[in-house]
Image 1 (tube, helix red, strand yellow):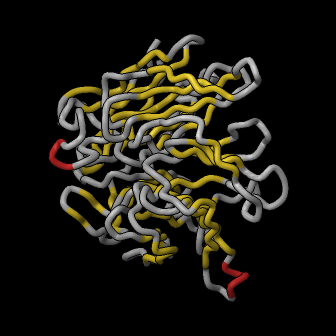
Image 2 (cartoon, helix red, strand yellow; image 1 turned 60 degrees about the vertical axis):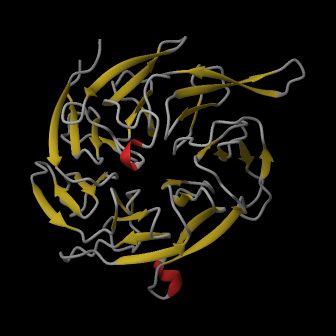
Length: 363
């Protein structure tokens, strides 16, 4: 039986990224998106974070990654965008007013950014998808090591161009995370410091020039091999690529369509949305991923969905769908979290069509 949802418009803003974290340390999750944060548990009180540069239909704010970067016990966040050409973090001082902005690195155009524990030390590293640039991992150095200042160490794993699309996960089952690009994957060093060793390139597939961020690395069919789930960010299509073996034991990849009929699947989350102990694929349309309906399907109806693995294929469940004002999209960096303490995961969906919450009311 499909889940039931209650929809609520939080703000008529056009920021495309959002996150959920406790901004003021009051024990309630808050929603952070663009220039504002919305105080939980009601999300009706809006607080200013500070201005975000705008370019045409876009704000230069393509991720909201929560981390206590300053080490003051309050969660800050990492962002960046296409036009500013910088990876940045905004500091939650707890004092009110605008959050100071700090540049981590001059990166060039950023499609969006994600965070993974690349070296398995329990701390997240920051990895921007810079299509025309190199693959670089940014690791935070604790403030105490810098006499009170915060800094990041940059580890360049590949000189580029990186291409559109980025994922991270254990492809070969050796217990170490590998990086996935649109046209192959980088195998992590088998031992020692992953940032000191050589990352081996495997050009085994072509996911397309507009692959999603993230490309998910998950064992879809439970055969013990990691598969890939990838959306078309600027065209029609959502697929999973099954990892297999040929008669000589070589690795093979077989593409299986999930949804070829909808477009602009830019962000994907693999999570147990219905509470049955098995993960589902949660995703949807990034409304007007390119301006003026330049993408195939750019002006189609918008929707958010979850796809449930049946043992043979994915079954699509619609959370919302329809024209602008009826359906809703999920931007470039959406969030899933229990906003009300119900034990069920809700969806926070930013986008050019507004900031929405879909409360999960169960079955």
